[in-house]
Image (spheres, rainbow, N blue to C red):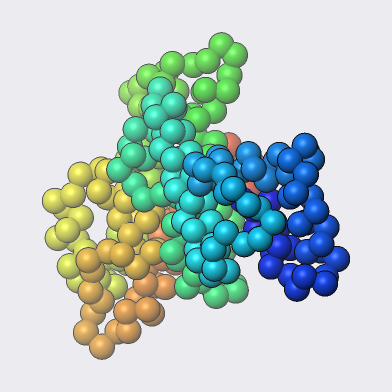
Length: 264
């Protein structure tokens, strides 16, 4: 993608500019390695190679829009393939979630509004790049079967509970008190939250906390007189603070993000 953007920028320069002259001369030489890369990238991205690469193939903004659209499609396909390839590592649930690059709440986020470490916990859960047992077990030798990638806390290990994203966010009793406080705060912000929460399944609950509320896509309405954007910030902060509190109690996450001993 970057190669095509560079080619397009150079080929659109005025004809007397050295960048345009060099690019046009390169494109006239089909044996040139750079030209071969440009042609191959065109084929990979758009599925065809223009007959003439010595000039723009379409309008400036149309080309940029097409390039952006193809890049987005490529990212989506790569993510869908990742989810498909790692089903044995517990990614099947992520097939029901938005694409992880849809970080809507980051477009609203002001500097210092949230803890960077807490945001990292959220993003890692979205991207399946965390240090929960469902992921780390895949990198051990020999690979640990998913059913044996258990939560490290004794209360869950003895019950054979697999530690995946849903278990960490919704079900692990180690974080029950912090989770209760978060849900109470969300109910105070959104009066209809609890009613929806009580009839939702785990997949829906996980999506509501990790995607919908931070991205302002949840069908929730704040208490009368409260601005919707202010409610979203408060609700997102409540979720992030819960994730941060849980991460501090998790041995691997604590070491990765906070580098602290228990109770430190």
